[in-house]
Image 1 (spheres, one colour):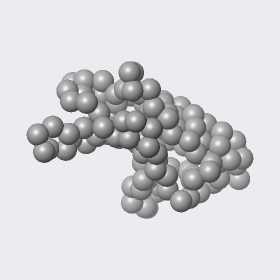
Image 2 (cartoon, one colour):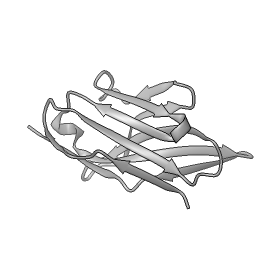
Image 3 (tube, rainbow, N blue to C red):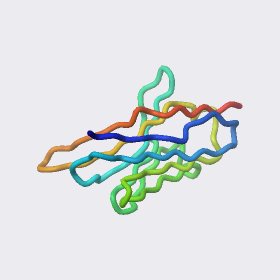
Length: 119
């Protein structure tokens, strides 16, 4: 049974910080990419940040310089350190894990954790 357990969502004031965690379990094949996406009310889900199995990272322009993604590959855990939070960062944040085998890509999602930033 695949399970992505997210934690760390909360309500904070603008300028504050939060750290999200996501631990993946039950995934059969090696995880190549882990990342965070978010979805604000009335908007589509969007990429926040990803990290490839080594240390290559990718960030949305809106969070670059404020958010830092990191990964503990041995624990299949990904973190998102969010600093200088803005009200526009308010969204449900979803963890994603991606693996591949024999030409087939597998995407797994967490249940989401709410981040609310007040001005």
